[in-house]
Amino acid sequence: MCLQVDYFLLSVLSCFKDGSIAKETHHPNGTLQQLPHIIIIGVRKGGTRALIEMLSLHSSVAAAQNEVHFFDWESHFQRGLPWYLSQMPYAFPDQVTVEKTPAYFTSSKVPKRIHQMNPDIKLLLILRDPTERVLSDYTQVFYNRLQKHKRYQPIESVLVKDGEINLGYKALNRSLYYVHMQNWLQYFPLESIHIVDGDELIRDPFPEMIKVERFLKLESQINASNFYFNKTKGFYCLRDHGRERCLHDSKGRAHPHVAPAILQKLYQFFHEPNKKFFELVGRTFNWK
Ligand code: A3P
Image 1 (cartoon, rainbow, N blue to C red):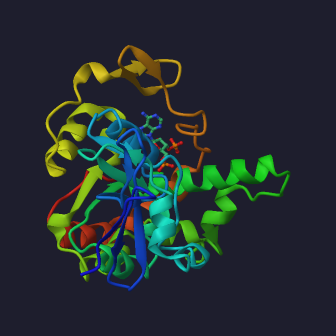
Image 2 (cartoon, rainbow, N blue to C red; image 1 turned 45 degrees about the vertical axis):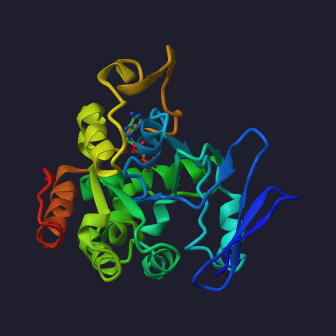
Image 3 (tube, rainbow, N blue to C red; image 1 turned 30 degrees about the vertical axis):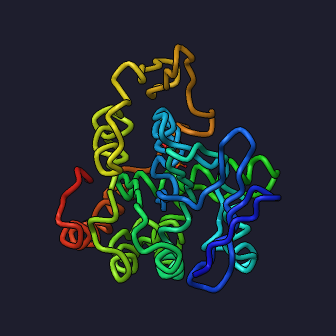
């Protein structure tokens, strides 16, 4: 038995499977920090920010603001669950806590670590067309380098080497969804992982969010009026208690032009891996 209540600190100490002790720190206003009940595990550039913002429309959800990188960064993981807990938002006891770290999906050590913390945790994975995801990945790195006044390579020279798809380009690997999904399925049943269709979330977010609410067994609360299309941004934005807001400018940037022949090669490259992924999850997606 490992639950102790420290009335002086208003905190609950509880033990975890790895032997470490984590604190549920209670705030005098009745809120507390809890380990996440839900984790958005990825994929990078899949629409993870949009998903956590949309989920936060629900009054029963408390979301961590930053990407925590607990399970994938050794320097964080070594600090143990108490540190992880300290990164969580203060939530009311009837709320569920969610964090998102898109890099979890493609990190092979993460599924086991999350399973050790909580084998019953609910996982959300948002995926989009693998080719689009690669272009989005490139665009993000491009802008990061531009900001730091670093050199950047044109997209076509990154994608193609000696006339063939450049297998050494890391962003391609991140779009090989079946490879990563296999790791997750070694630890979690498919029923614990809800896949959000990232292309659909862009096109029409409300139906995707209904499915998310259902999977999380949340009372149906998010509604169509929470979303409105912003023509200037070219994306849906959020309306919450009369307040309207769009995602940051870094979300929804134009992608570079790629020669149609190269794009075709990319689509072909992902054809087989996509098929394997569909078989793995028993579901298809409208990817080119
Ligand atoms: P692009 O900027 O390449 O278009 P992540 O948050 O995981 O980094 O994903 C970023 C992607 O979220 C964006 O990629 C964008 O396409 C997508 N997205 C989905 N819904 C969005 C929304 N309502 N507003 C802005 N971007 C959205």
